[in-house]
Amino acid sequence: MTDTLSENLAVLRQRWPELAARTEGQSVDGLAVELVEGNEQTLSIDGIQLTSRHGRLAEAQLQAASLPEGAPVVHLYGFGLGDLQRVLLAKPRLERLQVHILNGALLGLVLQVTDHTDWLSDPRVSLAHAGDAGEIQLPFFALPSELVLAEDAAAKIRDRLVSETHLAFNNRAFTAQDPELVARLQDNAPLLSSDGDVAELFGTIEGADVYVVATGPSLELHYEHLRQARRPGGPLLICVDTAYRPLLERGVVADIVVSIDQRISPRHLPPERSHASTLVYMPLLAADVLNPWRGRRLATYSASPVYAEARRRWPKAQLHGGGSVIHPAVDLAVRMGAARVTLFGADFAFPNDKTHAGWQDGDLGPQLTHARHWVLDGHGGRVRTQLNFRSYLTELERYIAQHPEVAFFNTSRGGALIAGTSFDENLARD
Image (cartoon, rainbow, N blue to C red; front, side, top):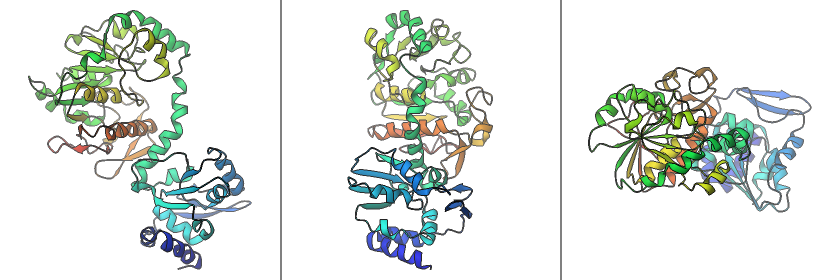
């Protein structure tokens, strides 16, 4: 044991004995470590450079400047080499700095090579493993290098951090002044004034079982079950728009179809056999999708500012928005009174190297070759995904956590593990 490690661990044992024991038992053998030199020195871990190699203090000062001035409590995700911690602790108004460890092996390594006793001994500092928490804390700063290096146990927290960081960027395309969106809402004004309100469905199936069907690859494992379940007294079936056609082609007619996206076309929602299905829609859908629909049409909104004027002129109930059509579909099931919601095709990932059920690679978005991220699947292994899918998963998990009165079940172990759900042992597939 090096003197540096021994001294660092002495502080940990005194202040956080359980964390110290956990750190001492942590192997660092799996890390590929390289010393990187410039004007200063830093470490590269598995090809990811932890900090600047030219101006570590200047980098930490720039990072600290992004946090609210005068915030009494700051949460730092990532341990790094201690530079940002020291800059933050120099702020006179800081009362508590909570450091959340994203990679236990990385912590064990940096404790060997860098003296952290000065800031670890500061009574304002708290230290914990990020993966032990279920949700992120604000305000926060997340060290970019450690978001990439996050261990599996911290994957859920990493995904929440990335989603929160990207929130403003993701919303940039949805402004109330966007000429294309304004024109689309104007085109749909006659429908908004005459179509029904999604609230007509609320509370109509209290205590019922509801199937919510998305378009993940695992849906292909359940077509036969869904076909057999379409019997009198069977579960209500709500599907997202892109699942409508694949289901229809296999003889499965949804009770309700939910659609929110302005890019949906008659190719996704062919109207010819739509008389038996209710379409719940947000008014960015194109008129050539809405007008030919032969079944019941009910309008809804999200809380987006895009709909502010439409909500004022044509009041309709809102459904939860989280970036994907699965969020309002699940919210509709809950608001209708479901006691049990079973998810099909809610993979948020590309199990078995496939992007969607019933569609060719790239038909509904980026191709499989663009999937450079991962989430944990139902077996605890990594499965490929794309960044926006991780954000959609995060928002669904948050929604589920807010509705403990409803039992949520998943049917895919090959897709993303969804916190707050249980696997339906009769239906879950790999």
